[in-house]
Image 1 (cartoon, rainbow, N blue to C red):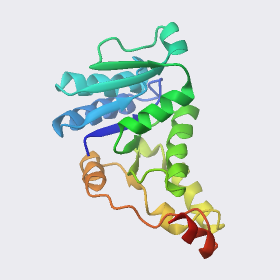
Image 2: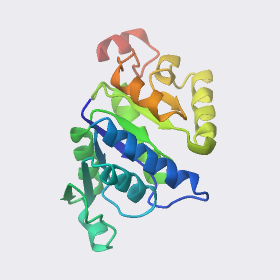
Image 3: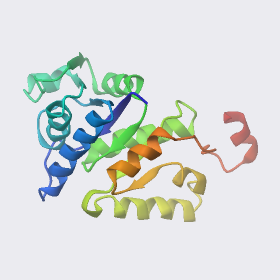
Image 4: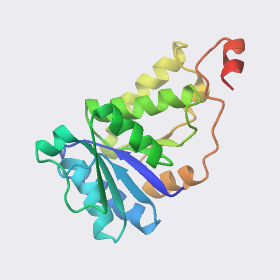
Length: 197
């Protein structure tokens, strides 16, 4: 694993622990010689994780659509900043540049991005590790919802177990480095599952 994509909020959240953990994650990525790929912003947790990497001597690639550059939210101190034409191009490019994905706390955009990666993996579009860093219990309600999806048979238990969820950055990166994809297909019907393998 050489590059990790981090999805996170452009806001800092209600308590300082969110930004401090984003900065800490950035330092861990730099110490592990992992390039950060992220949305290219300079505010909130996005700016914190990027600055954490840069301050520790690491590399950061930002991918940002032109309309957000026009809003003056692009980080101007990155190793590389790629400007693309749309949000769709941004997500596709971030996928191509990354060997794994981490969700820090965030809003609609963060959830949309990480769940698209989970969906792609269900459909065998890439087999890359996906982790939720549960800062301050932020993702606990979401994981309860995922367990509910499993219980109601809209999601296989193997799909739930094919992602990482926890609070320890070191354990998370170790899991990502040793990740082996599970049989996390979409369908309950075995014939349909076999067709996707």
